[in-house]
Amino acid sequence: MSIKAITGEELIEQKNFAQKVCSMTHAYEQKPLAFVHSYGCQQNVTDGEKIKGMLEEMGFGFTDDKTRADFILFNTCAVRENAVERVFGNIGALKQLKKKNSKLIIAVCGCMVQQSETALRLKKKFPFVDIIFGTHVLHTFPEILCKCIFENRNICEIPDMDGVIAEGIPVKRESAFKASVPIMYGCNNFCTYCVVPFVRGRERSRLAGDVISEVASLVEKGYKDILLLGQNVNSYGKGTDVDFPELLRRLDGLEGEFRIQFMTSHPKDCTERLIDIIADSKKICHHIHLPVQSGSDRILKLMNRHYDCAHYLNLVDYARKKIPDLNLTTDIIVGFPGETREDFEATLGLMKRVCFDSAFTFIFSPRSGTKAAAMEDPIPAEEKGRWFRELLEVQGECGSRSYQRYIGQTVRVLCEGKGRTSDKYYNGKSRQNIIVDFNGDISDIGKFVDVKITQALNWALIGEKIN
Ligand code: SAH
Ligand code: SF4
Image (cartoon, rainbow, N blue to C red; front, top):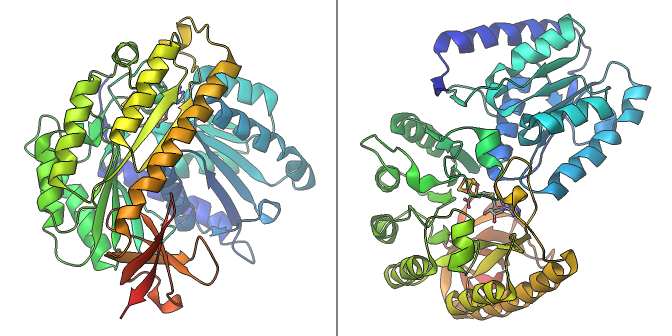
């Protein structure tokens, strides 16, 4: 299987399908309305923004109210079982809407659909779903919708191909000042617990020129917070002359006041050079999300992570030395198959040693097709639950200690909206990507504001605006 770049002609073909759908939507007295919901990670959210961009081009308006929608789409996630079950529950609830309005079109796409047995279960259980399509054919959505409407039939497009790169798809962004920009798609790492390489295909990077011109045009339009996305951004541009640190360096050189964030960094590919470039930059956030997953070398090996704790700790020490105000966050999996109390205590030890600013913690969820799903897993669910709570307690203490260091400091905040701790405040993020509430007003939204920190919670800072 090879990676395919979608050509200009193929995109023009899709524009023709979009035009045909327009001939139908324009016949409506009022624009037909679409409800689009993306589950899961940021990557999925950006796919949802592309789908909305294509829908807009096809003459749709949008609604947050499913009962008013003419088109409903769930863009699904498959990373953990509970995400899949939630989607199944929500699709089931649409049956009543379809009964009331037979013209309603229901579509399901995304990672969950890309797994053949889940797609089959979906089709069997919910025959009223009109459209099902996988992650690799997102750019053909106009064609899929067109066939469904004009040939009046159910569509299921889940080709067993590898991923593509499609430039030039319209994007309808949720925010006027925050934008996510995928720099690569797919993953080659095959961590033994993870379904992503199976549902997102092999790793492929966009051309540096395409990424840089997209970011430059966003900044020109007034975007101030650019989030670069990839499952393992550190392996961006392999085999080309622009690797990830170089891409960051070039983006940092663009004119204008804006910030660059990125996720996710894999510790095996995170280098001191990358840390040096962040430290020397003007615009790159002082935040690294560096998922460690476990503090036991034995479990890291079983997870196929290709690093050990010593490597991880060296990276953390170097990063904290070079970027003293670094916000370091992580992901942890509890209860990987065969994990013992000793392994778990090693994770607790690592968490205490590193004292992460925050951590996303998950209980292992077996995903069909992955190696870990076939491993023996003797630890009872209740025991995993107890470990999970223990982990949260340790993390809670670290989080609350770490933010105290900001009291009395002034941080530059990009204001995003109403306060998180109280309605009387406005809220934004610092360059460290930490949530900050402050005494702002509505005119601050979308702007940078200096805030003197007066209080620290374990998940946010509170402060006063400085003129
Ligand atoms: N590409 C990123 C994130 C992938 S998914 C990375 O490599 O870090 C986000 C997080 O979900 C992972 O970091 C992991 O902690 C968690 N996760 C993935 N698969 C899981 C599974 N089967 N069970 C529990 N947690 C899982
Ligand atoms: Fe999954 Fe590992 Fe790839 Fe992240 S790096 S997406 S955890 S396989």
